[in-house]
Amino acid sequence: MISFEKRMIKNSENLFNNKKYVPFCIGLVSELMGVSLREMKVSRVRDKTLARHLLHYALRSKTTLTLEGIGKITNKNHSTVIHSVRYINDASENDIYISTLKNCIDNEKASPIFASRNLFTEASIVNKSVPVRVEEIIRIVLKNIGKWSQDKI
Image 1 (cartoon, rainbow, N blue to C red):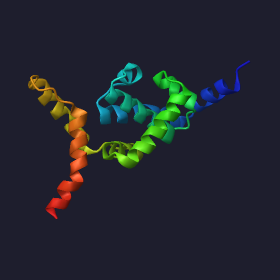
Image 2 (cartoon, rainbow, N blue to C red):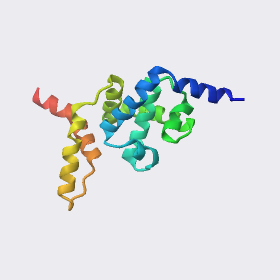
Image 3 (cartoon, helix red, strand yellow):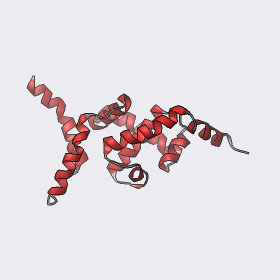
Image 4 (cartoon, rainbow, N blue to C red):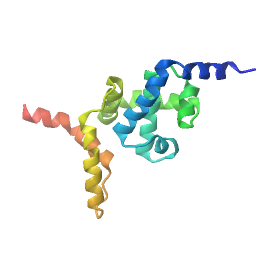
C-alpha cells in the first residue's frame, strides 16, 4: 500500500507543467548563479547555498510539486525547502541582490547583469594574486546602480 504522501509526490511529479518547469527552473538558477545542479545539491559554500535557496523558491512558485518532491530534487527535506522559500521572500525585502535574483525568477528570464559573471570570473582567474569573489562584485554593482542613476539625473 502506497502512503498518501508518496501518492501526492508521484502525482505532482507527473504533471505536464512540472515536466516543463523543473528543467527550466534548474537552468534559470544555474544561469543566474553560475552553479550546476550537482553543486547546489552538495555544497555548503554561501553562493551555492543561495543558488539552492533560489531553486527551491523557483520550483515552489513555478510548479505544483510538493515540498517533499522539491526536496527530492536537491536531496533535502521538506523543512529545508520551507526555510529556503521564506529566506528568499524575507531577504528580498532588504537585499537588492537577492531581490534582483527573485525578480529574475518571477519574470522567468535572467537579467543582463548576470551575463557579466563570466567576465569577472575570467578576470579573477587571470589575476590570481588578488582573490575576487564574483558574487560580491555583482552585489556591489547592484547596490550602487540606484546611486549611479540618481547621480546622472
